[in-house]
View 1 (cartoon, rainbow, N blue to C red):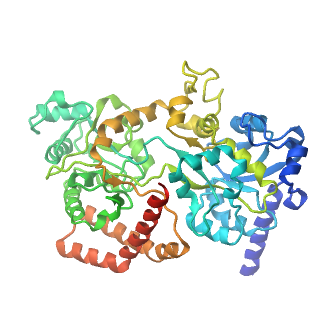
View 2: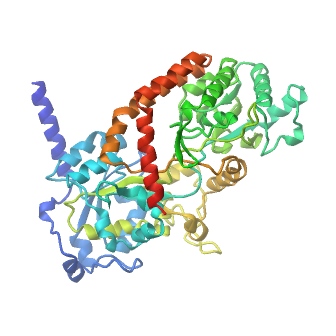
View 3: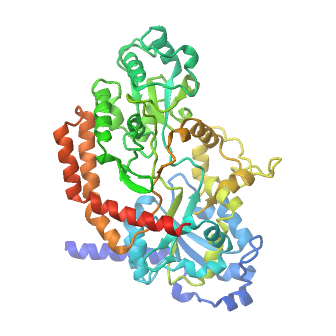
Length: 561
Protein backbone atom coordinates (compact mmCIF):
# COMPACT_ATOMS: atom_id res chain seq x y z
CA UNK A 1 0.00 0.00 0.00
CA UNK A 2 2.81 2.41 0.86
CA UNK A 3 4.54 1.81 -2.48
CA UNK A 4 1.29 2.36 -4.36
CA UNK A 5 0.69 5.61 -2.47
CA UNK A 6 4.09 6.96 -3.44
CA UNK A 7 3.49 6.12 -7.11
CA UNK A 8 0.14 7.91 -7.05
CA UNK A 9 1.67 10.95 -5.34
CA UNK A 10 4.41 11.24 -7.96
CA UNK A 11 1.86 10.85 -10.75
CA UNK A 12 -0.28 13.63 -9.28
CA UNK A 13 2.74 15.95 -9.04
CA UNK A 14 3.71 15.27 -12.63
CA UNK A 15 0.14 15.92 -13.77
CA UNK A 16 0.23 19.22 -11.89
CA UNK A 17 3.16 20.33 -14.05
CA UNK A 18 1.12 19.56 -17.16
CA UNK A 19 -1.84 21.48 -15.80
CA UNK A 20 0.28 24.55 -15.04
CA UNK A 21 2.35 24.55 -18.16
CA UNK A 22 -0.07 26.08 -20.61
CA UNK A 23 0.27 24.76 -24.16
CA UNK A 24 2.16 21.51 -24.51
CA UNK A 25 5.39 21.69 -26.46
CA UNK A 26 4.00 19.24 -29.00
CA UNK A 27 1.38 21.86 -29.85
CA UNK A 28 3.95 24.56 -30.56
CA UNK A 29 6.04 24.91 -33.68
CA UNK A 30 9.81 25.15 -33.57
CA UNK A 31 10.31 27.65 -36.39
CA UNK A 32 13.48 28.25 -38.34
CA UNK A 33 15.06 31.67 -37.86
CA UNK A 34 14.09 32.54 -41.45
CA UNK A 35 10.46 31.69 -40.72
CA UNK A 36 10.53 33.58 -37.44
CA UNK A 37 11.87 36.63 -39.25
CA UNK A 38 9.44 36.46 -42.14
CA UNK A 39 6.27 35.58 -40.26
CA UNK A 40 6.83 37.05 -36.82
CA UNK A 41 9.20 39.94 -37.52
CA UNK A 42 11.89 38.41 -35.32
CA UNK A 43 14.93 40.69 -34.99
CA UNK A 44 17.76 40.77 -32.48
CA UNK A 45 20.17 43.43 -33.73
CA UNK A 46 18.34 46.61 -32.65
CA UNK A 47 17.91 46.37 -28.88
CA UNK A 48 15.66 49.44 -28.83
CA UNK A 49 12.94 47.82 -30.96
CA UNK A 50 10.50 44.94 -30.38
CA UNK A 51 11.83 41.42 -30.85
CA UNK A 52 8.59 40.17 -32.46
CA UNK A 53 5.73 41.78 -34.34
CA UNK A 54 2.12 41.75 -33.14
CA UNK A 55 1.49 38.36 -34.71
CA UNK A 56 4.45 36.92 -32.83
CA UNK A 57 3.19 38.43 -29.61
CA UNK A 58 -0.09 36.55 -30.06
CA UNK A 59 1.14 33.22 -31.39
CA UNK A 60 4.40 32.58 -29.52
CA UNK A 61 4.41 32.02 -25.76
CA UNK A 62 7.16 30.77 -23.46
CA UNK A 63 6.53 28.99 -20.18
CA UNK A 64 9.14 29.91 -17.58
CA UNK A 65 9.23 28.32 -14.15
CA UNK A 66 10.68 30.32 -11.27
CA UNK A 67 10.89 30.40 -7.52
CA UNK A 68 10.24 33.79 -5.94
CA UNK A 69 10.49 35.55 -2.63
CA UNK A 70 7.35 35.28 -0.51
CA UNK A 71 7.03 39.09 -0.49
CA UNK A 72 7.18 39.42 -4.28
CA UNK A 73 4.22 39.90 -6.56
CA UNK A 74 3.48 37.16 -9.06
CA UNK A 75 5.88 37.85 -11.91
CA UNK A 76 2.98 37.97 -14.36
CA UNK A 77 1.64 40.94 -12.37
CA UNK A 78 4.93 42.80 -11.95
CA UNK A 79 5.11 46.09 -13.80
CA UNK A 80 8.69 45.45 -14.92
CA UNK A 81 7.59 42.23 -16.66
CA UNK A 82 4.59 43.89 -18.24
CA UNK A 83 6.82 46.72 -19.47
CA UNK A 84 9.22 44.16 -20.95
CA UNK A 85 6.37 42.58 -22.89
CA UNK A 86 5.32 45.99 -24.17
CA UNK A 87 8.85 46.74 -25.43
CA UNK A 88 9.68 43.28 -26.82
CA UNK A 89 6.35 41.64 -27.80
CA UNK A 90 7.71 38.41 -26.30
CA UNK A 91 4.99 36.72 -24.28
CA UNK A 92 6.29 34.92 -21.19
CA UNK A 93 3.93 33.00 -18.92
CA UNK A 94 5.50 32.75 -15.48
CA UNK A 95 4.84 29.90 -13.08
CA UNK A 96 5.95 31.06 -9.64
CA UNK A 97 6.54 28.78 -6.67
CA UNK A 98 8.24 29.19 -3.32
CA UNK A 99 11.92 28.40 -2.96
CA UNK A 100 11.10 25.36 -0.84
CA UNK A 101 8.68 24.00 -3.45
CA UNK A 102 11.29 24.46 -6.18
CA UNK A 103 13.84 22.57 -4.11
CA UNK A 104 11.51 19.60 -3.76
CA UNK A 105 10.32 19.66 -7.39
CA UNK A 106 13.64 20.36 -9.10
CA UNK A 107 14.54 16.75 -9.93
CA UNK A 108 10.97 16.01 -11.03
CA UNK A 109 11.05 18.93 -13.46
CA UNK A 110 14.28 17.76 -15.04
CA UNK A 111 12.98 14.20 -15.27
CA UNK A 112 9.60 15.11 -16.77
CA UNK A 113 10.55 14.96 -20.45
CA UNK A 114 6.96 15.12 -21.73
CA UNK A 115 6.03 18.53 -20.34
CA UNK A 116 8.87 20.58 -18.97
CA UNK A 117 8.80 24.38 -18.93
CA UNK A 118 10.89 26.13 -21.55
CA UNK A 119 13.29 27.56 -19.00
CA UNK A 120 13.92 27.92 -15.29
CA UNK A 121 14.62 31.34 -13.78
CA UNK A 122 16.42 31.41 -10.41
CA UNK A 123 17.55 27.91 -11.37
CA UNK A 124 20.38 27.73 -8.82
CA UNK A 125 22.32 25.21 -10.91
CA UNK A 126 25.63 23.97 -9.55
CA UNK A 127 28.58 23.17 -11.81
CA UNK A 128 28.00 19.47 -11.19
CA UNK A 129 24.33 19.68 -12.15
CA UNK A 130 25.18 21.54 -15.33
CA UNK A 131 27.74 18.93 -16.33
CA UNK A 132 25.29 16.12 -15.59
CA UNK A 133 22.37 17.55 -17.54
CA UNK A 134 24.56 18.81 -20.38
CA UNK A 135 25.88 15.28 -20.86
CA UNK A 136 22.31 13.99 -20.96
CA UNK A 137 21.39 16.57 -23.65
CA UNK A 138 18.78 18.15 -21.37
CA UNK A 139 20.17 21.69 -21.36
CA UNK A 140 20.38 24.05 -24.31
CA UNK A 141 23.98 25.13 -25.06
CA UNK A 142 23.41 28.87 -24.81
CA UNK A 143 26.85 29.65 -26.26
CA UNK A 144 25.62 28.23 -29.61
CA UNK A 145 23.11 31.10 -29.77
CA UNK A 146 25.27 34.12 -28.94
CA UNK A 147 24.59 35.54 -32.39
CA UNK A 148 21.07 36.34 -31.16
CA UNK A 149 22.25 37.84 -27.84
CA UNK A 150 24.17 41.06 -28.60
CA UNK A 151 24.34 42.26 -24.99
CA UNK A 152 25.48 38.98 -23.47
CA UNK A 153 27.89 38.35 -26.33
CA UNK A 154 29.57 41.69 -25.70
CA UNK A 155 29.89 40.95 -21.99
CA UNK A 156 31.73 37.73 -22.80
CA UNK A 157 33.97 39.49 -25.31
CA UNK A 158 34.82 42.35 -22.95
CA UNK A 159 35.14 40.25 -19.83
CA UNK A 160 37.02 36.98 -20.33
CA UNK A 161 37.10 36.60 -16.54
CA UNK A 162 33.29 36.35 -16.50
CA UNK A 163 33.27 34.04 -19.50
CA UNK A 164 35.66 31.66 -17.74
CA UNK A 165 33.31 31.42 -14.76
CA UNK A 166 30.54 30.15 -17.03
CA UNK A 167 32.23 27.70 -19.38
CA UNK A 168 31.64 24.01 -18.81
CA UNK A 169 35.20 22.65 -18.93
CA UNK A 170 33.96 19.28 -20.20
CA UNK A 171 32.92 20.64 -23.62
CA UNK A 172 33.76 24.37 -23.60
CA UNK A 173 30.12 25.48 -23.88
CA UNK A 174 27.96 27.75 -21.71
CA UNK A 175 24.69 26.31 -20.41
CA UNK A 176 23.43 28.98 -18.02
CA UNK A 177 22.94 32.73 -17.80
CA UNK A 178 24.60 34.63 -14.94
CA UNK A 179 23.69 37.36 -12.52
CA UNK A 180 26.46 39.99 -12.43
CA UNK A 181 26.30 42.79 -9.87
CA UNK A 182 29.67 44.44 -9.37
CA UNK A 183 29.71 46.87 -6.49
CA UNK A 184 32.82 45.81 -4.57
CA UNK A 185 30.79 44.91 -1.48
CA UNK A 186 30.59 41.15 -1.27
CA UNK A 187 34.30 40.56 -0.78
CA UNK A 188 34.25 42.51 2.49
CA UNK A 189 31.14 41.50 4.47
CA UNK A 190 32.24 42.84 7.86
CA UNK A 191 32.82 46.24 9.39
CA UNK A 192 33.38 46.76 13.11
CA UNK A 193 31.17 49.28 14.91
CA UNK A 194 31.48 50.43 18.52
CA UNK A 195 29.26 52.55 20.78
CA UNK A 196 31.05 55.88 21.03
CA UNK A 197 29.28 57.15 24.16
CA UNK A 198 30.12 53.90 25.94
CA UNK A 199 33.76 54.19 24.86
CA UNK A 200 33.88 57.74 26.16
CA UNK A 201 32.67 56.49 29.54
CA UNK A 202 35.51 53.96 29.55
CA UNK A 203 38.01 56.74 28.78
CA UNK A 204 36.55 58.97 31.51
CA UNK A 205 36.86 56.12 34.01
CA UNK A 206 40.53 55.66 33.10
CA UNK A 207 39.90 52.02 32.18
CA UNK A 208 41.73 52.29 28.85
CA UNK A 209 44.88 54.16 27.91
CA UNK A 210 46.32 55.46 24.66
CA UNK A 211 43.11 57.01 23.28
CA UNK A 212 41.23 60.20 24.02
CA UNK A 213 37.66 61.34 23.43
CA UNK A 214 38.89 63.15 20.32
CA UNK A 215 39.89 59.78 18.82
CA UNK A 216 36.38 58.33 19.18
CA UNK A 217 35.09 58.95 15.67
CA UNK A 218 34.86 57.01 12.42
CA UNK A 219 38.23 55.43 11.80
CA UNK A 220 38.90 54.69 15.49
CA UNK A 221 41.97 52.46 15.73
CA UNK A 222 42.26 50.10 18.68
CA UNK A 223 44.81 47.52 19.69
CA UNK A 224 43.68 44.12 20.93
CA UNK A 225 44.68 45.13 24.45
CA UNK A 226 42.66 48.36 24.28
CA UNK A 227 39.64 46.55 22.88
CA UNK A 228 39.91 43.96 25.64
CA UNK A 229 39.89 46.63 28.34
CA UNK A 230 36.95 48.41 26.71
CA UNK A 231 34.94 45.20 26.42
CA UNK A 232 35.65 44.33 30.08
CA UNK A 233 34.27 47.71 31.13
CA UNK A 234 31.21 47.17 28.93
CA UNK A 235 30.70 43.78 30.61
CA UNK A 236 31.01 45.01 34.20
CA UNK A 237 29.05 48.26 34.11
CA UNK A 238 25.52 49.47 33.46
CA UNK A 239 26.40 51.10 30.15
CA UNK A 240 22.82 51.70 28.95
CA UNK A 241 21.70 53.10 32.32
CA UNK A 242 18.72 50.81 32.88
CA UNK A 243 19.84 49.67 36.31
CA UNK A 244 21.13 46.28 35.13
CA UNK A 245 24.73 45.22 34.63
CA UNK A 246 24.05 41.95 32.85
CA UNK A 247 22.06 42.90 29.76
CA UNK A 248 24.91 44.58 27.88
CA UNK A 249 26.53 42.52 25.11
CA UNK A 250 30.14 43.71 24.84
CA UNK A 251 30.89 42.25 21.37
CA UNK A 252 28.38 40.61 19.09
CA UNK A 253 28.26 38.97 15.64
CA UNK A 254 26.42 36.16 13.84
CA UNK A 255 28.68 33.13 13.77
CA UNK A 256 29.33 31.78 10.26
CA UNK A 257 26.80 34.16 8.72
CA UNK A 258 27.52 35.46 5.22
CA UNK A 259 28.02 38.93 6.70
CA UNK A 260 28.66 40.25 10.19
CA UNK A 261 30.58 37.10 11.14
CA UNK A 262 33.61 36.28 13.29
CA UNK A 263 36.25 36.04 10.55
CA UNK A 264 37.74 39.53 10.93
CA UNK A 265 38.85 38.68 14.46
CA UNK A 266 41.45 36.38 12.88
CA UNK A 267 42.89 39.43 11.14
CA UNK A 268 44.45 40.39 14.49
CA UNK A 269 46.91 37.58 13.74
CA UNK A 270 47.58 38.37 10.09
CA UNK A 271 45.10 35.87 8.66
CA UNK A 272 42.72 36.84 5.85
CA UNK A 273 40.18 34.26 6.94
CA UNK A 274 36.69 33.57 5.56
CA UNK A 275 33.89 31.07 6.07
CA UNK A 276 35.54 28.48 3.80
CA UNK A 277 38.96 29.16 5.37
CA UNK A 278 40.19 29.21 1.76
CA UNK A 279 41.86 32.20 0.09
CA UNK A 280 44.36 32.95 -2.68
CA UNK A 281 47.76 34.11 -1.39
CA UNK A 282 50.46 34.87 -3.97
CA UNK A 283 48.54 32.85 -6.55
CA UNK A 284 48.27 29.76 -4.35
CA UNK A 285 45.07 28.30 -2.90
CA UNK A 286 45.70 28.52 0.84
CA UNK A 287 43.78 27.06 3.77
CA UNK A 288 43.97 29.28 6.86
CA UNK A 289 42.76 26.50 9.12
CA UNK A 290 46.10 24.64 8.99
CA UNK A 291 48.21 27.75 9.62
CA UNK A 292 49.62 27.76 13.18
CA UNK A 293 48.49 31.37 13.48
CA UNK A 294 44.94 30.03 13.28
CA UNK A 295 45.50 28.07 16.49
CA UNK A 296 46.95 31.16 18.22
CA UNK A 297 44.05 33.32 17.06
CA UNK A 298 41.43 30.74 18.06
CA UNK A 299 42.87 30.51 21.57
CA UNK A 300 42.91 34.30 21.88
CA UNK A 301 39.32 34.69 20.67
CA UNK A 302 38.20 31.79 22.86
CA UNK A 303 39.51 33.62 25.93
CA UNK A 304 37.33 36.61 25.03
CA UNK A 305 34.36 34.21 24.84
CA UNK A 306 35.20 32.57 28.17
CA UNK A 307 35.63 35.97 29.83
CA UNK A 308 32.23 37.15 28.57
CA UNK A 309 33.66 39.81 26.26
CA UNK A 310 32.15 38.09 23.24
CA UNK A 311 28.52 37.19 23.91
CA UNK A 312 28.02 33.41 23.56
CA UNK A 313 24.68 34.18 21.91
CA UNK A 314 26.78 35.19 18.88
CA UNK A 315 27.37 31.50 18.18
CA UNK A 316 23.72 30.44 18.14
CA UNK A 317 21.61 33.42 17.05
CA UNK A 318 20.19 33.87 13.58
CA UNK A 319 20.66 37.00 11.51
CA UNK A 320 17.06 37.98 12.21
CA UNK A 321 17.55 37.59 15.98
CA UNK A 322 20.71 39.68 15.85
CA UNK A 323 19.00 42.51 13.98
CA UNK A 324 15.88 42.42 16.16
CA UNK A 325 17.88 42.52 19.40
CA UNK A 326 19.77 45.59 18.25
CA UNK A 327 16.64 47.72 18.15
CA UNK A 328 15.29 49.76 21.05
CA UNK A 329 17.36 49.87 24.24
CA UNK A 330 21.06 49.83 23.40
CA UNK A 331 22.66 46.56 24.44
CA UNK A 332 25.43 46.21 21.81
CA UNK A 333 28.82 47.60 22.74
CA UNK A 334 30.57 46.48 19.54
CA UNK A 335 29.39 44.41 16.60
CA UNK A 336 30.27 43.35 13.06
CA UNK A 337 27.93 44.20 10.17
CA UNK A 338 27.92 46.15 6.92
CA UNK A 339 26.36 49.22 8.50
CA UNK A 340 25.14 50.29 11.90
CA UNK A 341 22.03 51.80 10.33
CA UNK A 342 20.55 48.33 9.78
CA UNK A 343 21.41 46.98 13.22
CA UNK A 344 20.58 49.61 15.84
CA UNK A 345 17.89 52.21 16.39
CA UNK A 346 20.38 55.04 16.89
CA UNK A 347 23.27 54.49 14.47
CA UNK A 348 24.56 57.99 15.22
CA UNK A 349 25.72 56.58 18.57
CA UNK A 350 28.16 54.22 16.84
CA UNK A 351 31.43 54.77 14.97
CA UNK A 352 33.13 52.45 12.52
CA UNK A 353 36.55 51.13 13.54
CA UNK A 354 39.58 50.15 11.57
CA UNK A 355 40.50 46.46 11.94
CA UNK A 356 41.74 45.65 15.44
CA UNK A 357 45.53 45.66 15.68
CA UNK A 358 46.70 42.34 17.08
CA UNK A 359 49.25 41.55 19.83
CA UNK A 360 52.08 41.44 17.27
CA UNK A 361 50.87 44.47 15.32
CA UNK A 362 48.97 42.52 12.62
CA UNK A 363 45.98 44.36 11.16
CA UNK A 364 44.00 42.81 8.32
CA UNK A 365 40.45 41.74 7.53
CA UNK A 366 38.38 38.93 6.10
CA UNK A 367 38.34 38.48 2.33
CA UNK A 368 35.13 36.68 1.49
CA UNK A 369 34.66 34.28 -1.41
CA UNK A 370 31.14 35.60 -2.03
CA UNK A 371 31.14 36.02 -5.84
CA UNK A 372 29.81 39.06 -7.67
CA UNK A 373 29.02 36.79 -10.62
CA UNK A 374 26.29 34.30 -9.82
CA UNK A 375 26.39 31.35 -12.19
CA UNK A 376 23.59 28.90 -12.97
CA UNK A 377 20.88 31.53 -12.59
CA UNK A 378 18.86 30.72 -15.73
CA UNK A 379 18.81 27.57 -17.85
CA UNK A 380 16.87 26.79 -21.03
CA UNK A 381 15.79 23.27 -21.88
CA UNK A 382 17.04 21.81 -25.14
CA UNK A 383 13.49 21.03 -26.33
CA UNK A 384 12.35 24.66 -25.96
CA UNK A 385 10.65 25.76 -29.21
CA UNK A 386 12.10 28.89 -30.79
CA UNK A 387 14.99 29.23 -28.31
CA UNK A 388 16.51 32.09 -30.29
CA UNK A 389 13.53 34.29 -29.40
CA UNK A 390 13.60 33.42 -25.71
CA UNK A 391 17.34 34.03 -25.49
CA UNK A 392 17.03 37.37 -27.28
CA UNK A 393 14.36 38.27 -24.73
CA UNK A 394 16.58 37.29 -21.78
CA UNK A 395 19.42 39.19 -23.43
CA UNK A 396 17.50 42.44 -22.87
CA UNK A 397 17.84 41.86 -19.11
CA UNK A 398 21.55 42.67 -19.47
CA UNK A 399 20.88 46.21 -20.68
CA UNK A 400 21.75 48.55 -17.77
CA UNK A 401 18.38 50.29 -17.55
CA UNK A 402 16.53 46.95 -17.62
CA UNK A 403 19.01 45.42 -15.15
CA UNK A 404 18.32 48.28 -12.74
CA UNK A 405 14.59 47.55 -12.81
CA UNK A 406 15.02 43.78 -12.59
CA UNK A 407 17.21 44.30 -9.53
CA UNK A 408 15.39 47.10 -7.71
CA UNK A 409 11.98 47.63 -9.28
CA UNK A 410 10.37 49.49 -12.21
CA UNK A 411 10.43 53.10 -13.30
CA UNK A 412 7.34 54.77 -11.89
CA UNK A 413 7.27 52.58 -8.79
CA UNK A 414 10.82 52.44 -7.45
CA UNK A 415 12.50 54.91 -9.81
CA UNK A 416 11.35 58.41 -10.71
CA UNK A 417 10.00 58.98 -14.22
CA UNK A 418 12.37 61.93 -14.57
CA UNK A 419 16.15 61.41 -14.66
CA UNK A 420 18.64 63.56 -12.78
CA UNK A 421 20.87 66.19 -14.39
CA UNK A 422 23.26 63.44 -15.55
CA UNK A 423 20.44 61.46 -17.15
CA UNK A 424 20.62 58.76 -14.50
CA UNK A 425 17.83 56.87 -12.75
CA UNK A 426 16.92 58.19 -9.32
CA UNK A 427 15.07 56.18 -6.70
CA UNK A 428 11.79 57.55 -5.40
CA UNK A 429 11.22 58.16 -1.68
CA UNK A 430 10.29 54.97 0.20
CA UNK A 431 6.51 54.87 0.76
CA UNK A 432 5.30 55.48 4.30
CA UNK A 433 5.34 52.32 6.37
CA UNK A 434 7.68 50.40 4.08
CA UNK A 435 11.41 49.69 4.14
CA UNK A 436 13.69 49.81 1.11
CA UNK A 437 13.97 46.01 1.21
CA UNK A 438 10.20 45.53 1.33
CA UNK A 439 9.64 47.83 -1.65
CA UNK A 440 12.37 46.12 -3.64
CA UNK A 441 11.36 42.53 -2.88
CA UNK A 442 7.74 43.24 -3.76
CA UNK A 443 8.46 44.79 -7.15
CA UNK A 444 11.75 43.31 -8.41
CA UNK A 445 12.18 39.74 -9.68
CA UNK A 446 15.97 39.93 -9.20
CA UNK A 447 17.85 37.30 -11.20
CA UNK A 448 19.91 37.88 -14.34
CA UNK A 449 21.39 41.38 -14.60
CA UNK A 450 24.61 43.16 -15.52
CA UNK A 451 25.38 46.12 -13.29
CA UNK A 452 29.02 47.12 -13.52
CA UNK A 453 31.07 50.27 -13.04
CA UNK A 454 29.70 51.81 -16.24
CA UNK A 455 26.11 51.34 -15.05
CA UNK A 456 26.77 52.93 -11.64
CA UNK A 457 28.47 55.93 -13.24
CA UNK A 458 26.13 56.49 -16.19
CA UNK A 459 22.75 54.78 -15.81
CA UNK A 460 21.55 54.49 -12.21
CA UNK A 461 22.37 55.99 -8.86
CA UNK A 462 23.33 53.55 -6.13
CA UNK A 463 21.09 53.12 -3.14
CA UNK A 464 22.27 55.52 -0.41
CA UNK A 465 23.07 52.63 1.95
CA UNK A 466 25.16 50.88 -0.72
CA UNK A 467 27.10 54.10 -1.35
CA UNK A 468 27.62 54.46 2.40
CA UNK A 469 28.97 50.92 2.61
CA UNK A 470 31.38 51.51 -0.26
CA UNK A 471 32.64 54.77 1.22
CA UNK A 472 33.34 53.06 4.53
CA UNK A 473 34.96 50.03 2.92
CA UNK A 474 37.24 52.27 0.88
CA UNK A 475 38.48 53.89 4.09
CA UNK A 476 38.42 51.05 6.60
CA UNK A 477 38.70 47.79 4.65
CA UNK A 478 40.54 48.17 1.34
CA UNK A 479 43.77 49.54 2.88
CA UNK A 480 44.07 46.49 5.13
CA UNK A 481 44.09 43.77 2.47
CA UNK A 482 47.54 42.89 1.09
CA UNK A 483 47.85 42.97 -2.70
CA UNK A 484 48.96 39.33 -2.58
CA UNK A 485 45.60 38.22 -1.13
CA UNK A 486 42.57 37.61 -3.33
CA UNK A 487 39.26 35.78 -2.91
CA UNK A 488 38.74 32.45 -4.63
CA UNK A 489 36.61 33.22 -7.73
CA UNK A 490 33.88 31.07 -9.24
CA UNK A 491 35.77 28.08 -10.59
CA UNK A 492 34.65 25.48 -13.10
CA UNK A 493 35.65 21.87 -12.47
CA UNK A 494 35.97 18.74 -14.59
CA UNK A 495 33.75 15.78 -13.80
CA UNK A 496 36.73 14.01 -12.24
CA UNK A 497 37.47 17.02 -10.05
CA UNK A 498 33.84 17.26 -8.97
CA UNK A 499 33.96 13.61 -7.96
CA UNK A 500 37.06 14.31 -5.86
CA UNK A 501 35.30 17.20 -4.13
CA UNK A 502 32.24 15.04 -3.53
CA UNK A 503 34.40 12.36 -1.93
CA UNK A 504 36.30 14.62 0.47
CA UNK A 505 34.90 18.11 0.89
CA UNK A 506 31.91 17.38 3.11
CA UNK A 507 34.00 15.36 5.53
CA UNK A 508 36.62 18.12 5.71
CA UNK A 509 34.05 20.87 6.28
CA UNK A 510 32.25 18.87 8.97
CA UNK A 511 35.54 18.15 10.74
CA UNK A 512 36.52 21.83 10.74
CA UNK A 513 33.09 23.01 11.86
CA UNK A 514 32.83 20.53 14.72
CA UNK A 515 36.27 21.26 16.11
CA UNK A 516 36.25 25.03 15.66
CA UNK A 517 32.99 25.65 17.51
CA UNK A 518 34.21 23.46 20.37
CA UNK A 519 37.54 25.29 20.58
CA UNK A 520 35.93 28.73 20.55
CA UNK A 521 33.33 27.90 23.19
CA UNK A 522 35.37 25.63 25.45
CA UNK A 523 38.65 27.36 26.11
CA UNK A 524 40.72 26.92 22.97
CA UNK A 525 42.87 24.14 21.56
CA UNK A 526 45.91 22.47 23.14
CA UNK A 527 49.09 21.89 21.13
CA UNK A 528 48.70 18.11 20.95
CA UNK A 529 45.06 18.43 19.85
CA UNK A 530 46.08 20.96 17.20
CA UNK A 531 48.77 18.67 15.83
CA UNK A 532 46.32 15.76 15.73
CA UNK A 533 43.81 18.01 13.94
CA UNK A 534 46.29 18.95 11.21
CA UNK A 535 47.29 15.32 10.70
CA UNK A 536 43.70 14.12 10.61
CA UNK A 537 42.48 16.78 8.17
CA UNK A 538 45.20 15.73 5.74
CA UNK A 539 44.10 12.11 6.12
CA UNK A 540 40.50 13.09 5.38
CA UNK A 541 41.59 14.59 2.05
CA UNK A 542 42.62 18.26 2.34
CA UNK A 543 45.63 17.86 -0.03
CA UNK A 544 43.39 16.33 -2.70
CA UNK A 545 40.80 19.11 -2.37
CA UNK A 546 43.50 21.79 -2.37
CA UNK A 547 44.96 20.36 -5.59
CA UNK A 548 41.54 20.42 -7.28
CA UNK A 549 41.06 24.08 -6.41
CA UNK A 550 44.61 24.97 -7.41
CA UNK A 551 44.29 23.26 -10.80
CA UNK A 552 40.95 24.96 -11.44
CA UNK A 553 42.34 28.32 -10.35
CA UNK A 554 45.40 27.94 -12.60
CA UNK A 555 43.07 27.28 -15.55
CA UNK A 556 40.98 30.30 -14.61
CA UNK A 557 44.00 32.60 -14.47
CA UNK A 558 45.59 31.34 -17.68
CA UNK A 559 42.41 31.48 -19.74
CA UNK A 560 41.09 34.75 -18.32
CA UNK A 561 43.99 36.78 -19.71
